[in-house]
Amino acid sequence: MAGFQNSKGKSVLLKMVKGIQENKAYLGEIDGLIGDGDHGMNMNKGFTLFEKRYADKDLGFTEGLYELGSILFTEIGGSMGPIYGTVFMDTASAGENLEEITVKDLADMLAAGLDGLEEIVEARVGDKTLMDTISPAVDSLLESAESGRGFDEALPRMKEAARKGRDSTKDMVAKFGRASRLGERSRGALDAAAVSCCIILENMADGILEMLLP
Image (cartoon, rainbow, N blue to C red; front, side, top):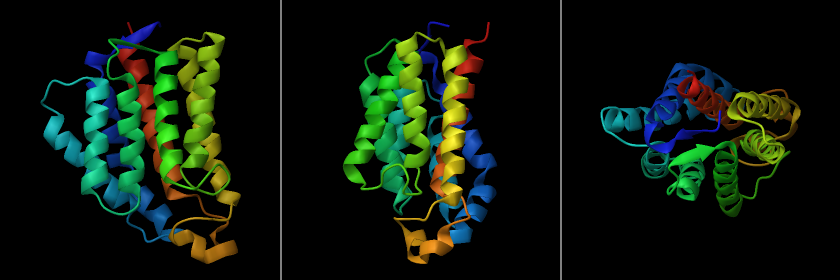
């Protein structure tokens, strides 16, 4: 599994859309425990808008990821729109000129998305945010690229890192967002954005693996 064609990556994006749509209610329930309960609704709105506008259009992975990020940034409101919008647009921009995307390319792209996120938020790993999911996932992919692993090995490892990061937020005290007002009472619930980030990364990985199947 050397890489996948950027121009044929729209199916990966639609897999990510489906993942968010199928978990709309679940994300709302999690967010309702320590937040305002609208995370699932807002994420579903943005991803579904992308699907409606681009499902029938011919576009590649990075082009589509940029358009998805743009929709999230400008049209879903709340804090998560600009956060996910920045991650997706910076990830896409880092790979926009690639014809084929390898493990190293995807790792570098997602690392660029993480860098962009770190420029606009103060949260870091340990603060009970999506940072706890995306940062270890990116680290895992970078390590796989360094070790010369193909997608068939690298992506399951990335998914496992994302899941561990997501689960780690349950025992944390929120430092940012509405949940931070609860202090110690925020402990015991997963962070909704950490969960949605895991869903996105898992479906991105599964979409790439499905595309590469013989």
